[in-house]
Image (cartoon, rainbow, N blue to C red; front, side):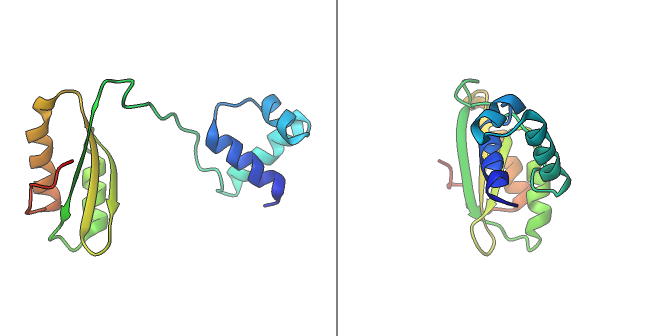
Length: 131
């Protein structure tokens, strides 16, 4: 990876919908050269996917963070199960078995079911940790 590849990666990270023409203009390369470089970054596994991230505030969603210490030793399994729940968008390990779980709610009435699901799957015993 050279300086141009790094610049292309950062530009695409900032806005993955930029056209090759726009990228070429910034990098002072031909469109064909940018296409080859981006394809090379994909083939090398540096660029893994192009995604769309929707703003939760645009959806009028309620953002909630649940955190606590899980008593389950297999944190990978917990993260996988939690990640499959539609309201959960983020699961992070804060060291040891301490988990942070980000979720969004369409309305506050979803709170009890989501927190119960998290407590059941992650076996977080202290349910008072909600922001």
